[in-house]
Image 1 (cartoon, rainbow, N blue to C red):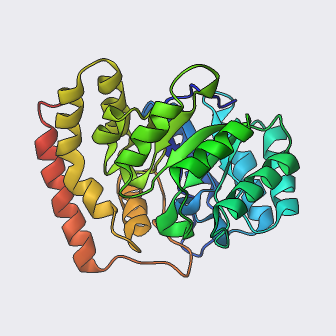
Image 2: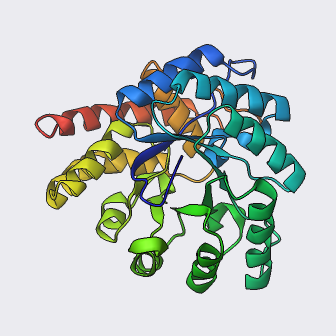
Length: 307
């Protein structure tokens, strides 16, 4: 189970599709093996970048069970269960927890535009899912449209022991991260904080007290090495390595196009048979692909002597 001291890199997994848009479970197996070979500490599936809203309920459950079976307990797997209906959330949660999930991730509904609504919603979520289900709260206002104040988040964490992890990807959010870590850094108050945003600010987030990353950058080995070096006390070495990947991190961070870039990179790395993004979704142009090729070659040159 995920817990208040969970750390490392929890990779946000893509959802592989064939070119005709069907679930690709063969590529799914290869993807799971790839992530594990890269040294990730955990995995998160059915997240926003996992195209969860584009899956049917049956597809979501099929994919989750398949990943959990392939991982087979080697690392904890968090399953995104966010959705407008608590009954559906409860059904999916029960299914994936029974299949071996380590916890679930819940993002706020777009209508939660006051502190009172936010607190009330997570109280309902916790009561509905049950106290034995560890929860990761996702704070991603750029996508959800919901902005949590620091005080509201701290009140939610204090009221619900089963919320053991925060996926922090507010932006700008470094000061928010610092204040939450200061308030949740010790004893029973401690909270696991993993960060997103395609790892764009990972070195600074680690220096501000994050426990690691929960994002899907297509080179997970970078994030693993940066986090490992940071924990070993090699802060400058961690940042030097990150700097080599920064142009690729930035390129993948393009709003509206980032998932297509990520899947194209995973396809080129032999992980996915197809870079297919389900409609409505972006597709790379020939010029995009040429830029990606150039960035890849420059990255490979920079890495000589760094790893």
